[in-house]
Image 1 (cartoon, one colour):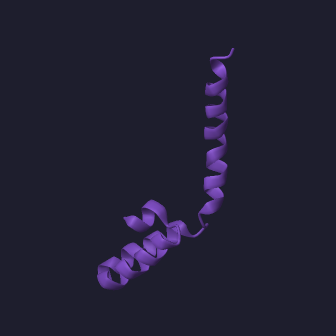
Image 2 (cartoon, rainbow, N blue to C red):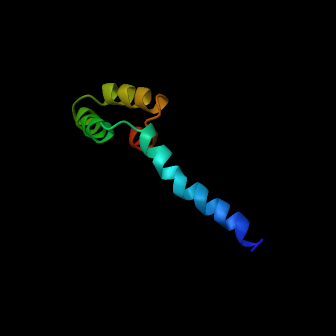
Image 3 (cartoon, rainbow, N blue to C red):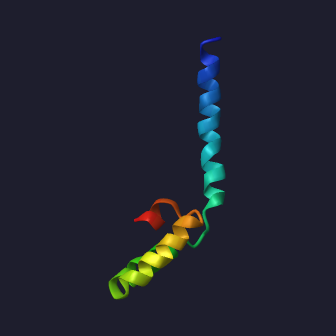
Length: 65
């Protein structure tokens, strides 16, 4: 049982992570991403500026894309 304790703690941590990660992202991330892709087609410089701001504010992978 002692060998299972670290594994159980790791499993509990992994299972708890998605709940906290889900609340850190805004509900409009998908729409924001689509708007950024559209803007990249019409004004790439402005799209880069907006994406940089989004990334600085926690936009994660969608903002880096």
